[in-house]
Length: 302
Image (cartoon, rainbow, N blue to C red; front, top):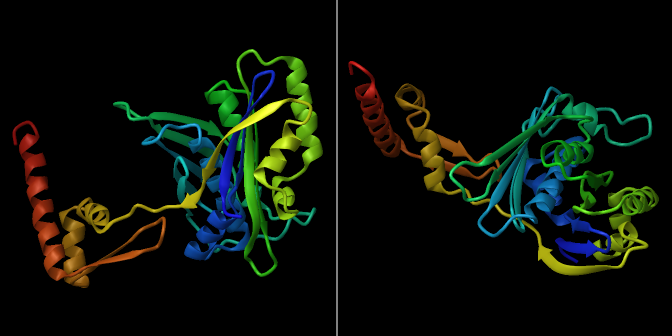
């Protein structure tokens, strides 16, 4: 059974998204060689990105960035409907387990801010941000929905990491009350969420996203009307990394030529390495000098 997400609506005004992301998170672990704690943190944010991107239209995208003061540093996820990628600043960080035996994601993330940037194809992207409430990521995403989008939401994201470090199960859910939903529906959902337990345990026990939806929406009639495959997808290219080098500016490109004679650029998302020989770096240097000259000429008195 591969990774996928389902979208369901329930009576009384409920939207539910449930995803299995085990293969996606394991792919991230392999690419970034993450420690168990980093795997859990990045996996939760990747799952959150997959859930949130499912509410977008084709061609739209969103970026989730967590800037925390914990040892993991920044976490970044970019997601389009069905296609997700991400990275963590310090992938090898490991911390002692919490007293309950679970990975200490909250302390690894620390205090800080969650940023949400949505590219909806308009002139300017939508940018929202909230302070982290726990660093556990699921609670932080729910806090974002309530504070920034005024959408009462419950978010559960989880990753089970096996003793050898491999991802045993990963996934999550997003349940939102739609306008007009009554108090009785909200109380029913709260009870269902409590009784269901951690989503990673449900997936590890063999439950499918459809099975989990039945648990979350127990007592409500609902309809599943979309099943969306999920996969890791990095769209990096030599041209994009060339632009990254060009953005370094003339001074840095000159230093690279003097010290190394060639350049390497590594994609932060998939770790693919792109190499540029001396001739290519010299060409970039010339372009950079030309661009810098134009900027100088645009200044008053230039």
